[in-house]
Image (cartoon, rainbow, N blue to C red):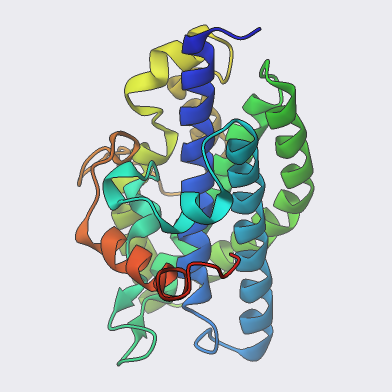
Length: 258
């Protein structure tokens, strides 16, 4: 039987994994019909749907652990209760999907590429964890990760090796993403205990693997958490706006299924 401490840390880790994918899936969905070309529109929509499916698996596990129904976990928590990294809640650019969207494709490519690599590394670490249901979910999700990685890596390399203007915009986006990427690797205030309980490896170990993979890329700027620690419930106003949109149907029709 797991200890109270183990259960508390396990639940916190699953919230972090779920909320990250949930918010990034939403940001990806905002590109529907706005991607650079029709093939990318279809591919990006598929990736975003996968991410939402991954989030659903995590939220389902939280429901099994007694945290409440999935619908309530996704649509009835306050922004302060979300444990996602700030990087995934940031908007794609200026405007909204319905009003003057001016989204930044370079930022989107870099964010998704860097996040996907970080996610792949986290899942590989979680496969070694001591909680079997979470290991099984990590193994299932990992099957789709190779496609996601290939997709964003191709975009990243093509754009950064393209025209001088494309490279300039990509380099600016790399700096922007790195300013919040440390939040993706963070475990928040539960970090030391998660590691001690063998739920996941140390943050520094995962970050080193990420940097080793990208050793040939221009990622010399340090990782930061410029706008705060999302794992501890610190967020930007962008999260509240995103959750308001995501929960609009649920709040108007509480009996609807997510």
